[in-house]
Length: 121
Image 1 (cartoon, rainbow, N blue to C red):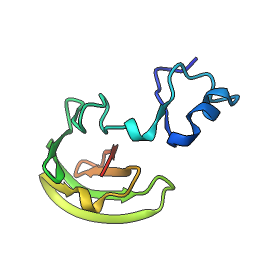
Image 2: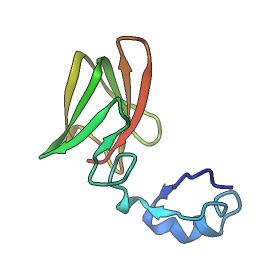
Image 3: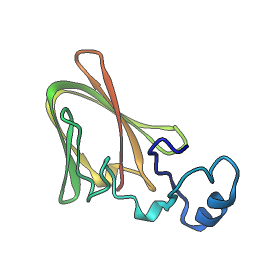
Image 4: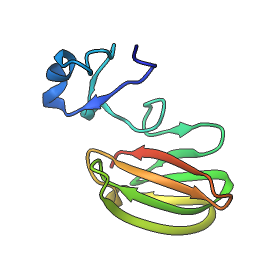
């Protein structure tokens, strides 16, 4: 039972993950080098009907019909990287502010709800 999840793991460890109990339940396990960001994995473009993320040159453009209050970034270990107060429906994020293999962003809206996304530098 993999619940439709697709894990991305360190490139050199793909075969090990495929053979390891608990991980071998996944039909597909991909190397992190193939991760392209977003829910559909297409060039860092993501949309869920609320938040839209577009790859734009050396960065990403976040757009939402709701007002974004704050965006906080974390590395893959969960360590805090930065926090930006926004108070806008759009935000530009420079790829140079992101860490490899990807940065986890918590987007907090003015209405108190949150959304979590991953972006690759």
